[in-house]
Image (cartoon, rainbow over all chains, first blue to last red; front, top):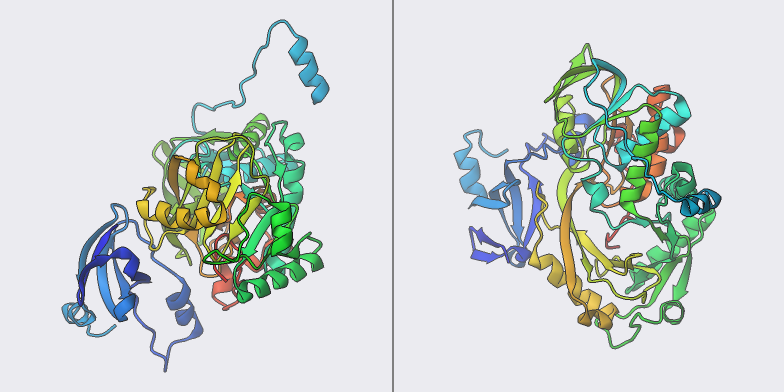
Length: 93
Length: 413
């Protein structure tokens, strides 16, 4: 079985994880118009190549970020949410 | 047709006629360019030529004729969906499938088997009743049957309380059928080509030319061509092609795997699906058990096969059909399914003038081939969204007007 390296639990079977899709910028609830919410909820870049995604380790309910290649099926890197957002200087997206 | 076959059989020499008339060069311009020579693209080209008199059409494909998901699906045809919009749409497809062999002068081996959607929980029984009522209302034959009746119709199925997930009943859909997927695509290609449509395999589209909000041509690896109208029908690559036109789609590309057993004598007449167990199975005309399950757990642009898929599929399959333990797997493969958030397709007009989309076919594309081709051709010919396609417009996502089709293949309820 494919192994994913959870930032909290270490290497675990991929069947323990839940794929939650692309990292997107969350609209501002106070100001975002419907169109922005529609894009956030439904539209996807759906890239062939390197992507940044939300993943969940289900047994421990631990959310984190993974960098994957969607063509070669390689998991390139996993990181905690804090590590990801401190690396991306814009702060929490 | 049978008389022609008899005469052919009595002839001394059995000359063959090539099915396809391959064109050589690309022309500079076409009335319609269709990207993707799969079942949907070819069917659309056929109906454009046959029903709307639009014959200056080119169908382009990066690979070979019908080599994508048309060649990789498990060929089930049915109309027992959940939403009235979905049922009306797939009902027309079943009707077109019934006469398709005559229409295309090619045997598509349409075989009505009857279709079970098994229920293992009270919630699934409730959904089955819901679907049966919607189906009956829309004129589609479906009914809820109990476990005893399941066993009567399909004696080889293990219907027992000893199972991990006992069968409580099923949605029984007598018109459920299978067909020969390659023949469907080849038949459409043959009849479209006979009417002047050009099909160009190994012709990758590398760009889409947009002028003042209007699609006017495509760049290909073999040169640029102008087009009056452009349609994309490229399944797993939908997001990639749409991006060339400047569109972002509500689609995620996720592999869907399937496999067949070695061929055996006819033992399973019906098509059996269990949404709760994520399995479906039918026996092909060749005798192979054709099996599939849910889509992969994460998105990928790959057609690799996994052991995980086989393991989870077979665990449940053996519970339903213990005799399967004696069969060996012959082939396993995958297709790249273009999944939408509401398990419904995206068809028709786009924000770009003269650019038409046929995408979001996820795990339910083959059964819609005829109706999709017919209605997409109508949409392209008239420039208007046909009534039957209105619920499936791309614009539904802007207005939060999703279709919520949980009757899709292997979706748990």
